[in-house]
Amino acid sequence: MATPLSTAPHQRADLVTNGIAAKDIPDLFTAENNGLEQLKAKVREQSKPSYTSDEIFGQFCHTAEYINCPVDMAFKYAANVYCLEEFTFSLRNFEPVGEGLYKGTEALAKDTYIYMRVDSYPDSRVVDHLCAWDQGEELWMRYHFRFLDALPAVRQPGTIVLWTNCKHPYYDRAVTDVPSCIAEARARTDRLWVGDVWPSFYAIHKIEAANLKRVLEYRFARR
Image 1 (tube, rainbow, N blue to C red):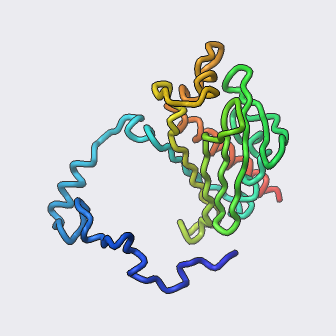
Image 2 (image 1 turned 30 degrees about the vertical axis):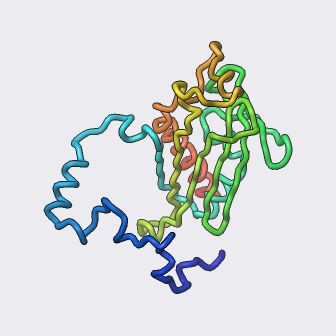
């Protein structure tokens, strides 16, 4: 594994960009310009007893899971495109189509193909599943994973997987400034559009993260 940059000495001057120091940036909320009472008031202002689903998952969908298996086992598994045929609810039948791109089927919608490329970074145990319905030219649906060694994180052997999706504008039917391939795909009346499922992304990904956990734990226990 590569040596982390944190072992090199940091320079305060490296933080100054375009000659602008942080103290010169307006509206930062810090201890230099606010006391503890102001902080308490700000926390109360930004805290509620309950939140709507859109408030929590409107723009970013975060999922996390603990897996009782070695972190490198989990990382290597997720870095293989064919793992998606095992732990996802609906992605199947992947075949290579060239230059690291794979084409599979999406059972969530009628007669729908999904194109997928998996980028993996062993030094940081990051895996990106880059994909799109119907076409492989712009992989705008992005599933970002990071696999953490659970022992230093939560004092328990195993893996913590962090999984994040961002709501790209193409998900939203109200966004009209889109390429023709997106407009035509959204206009189909014989199936749903992937953006219609966005409100359910968290629930679906929790199901799939649980599947990921079961697959890896079952195999690790029988290694």
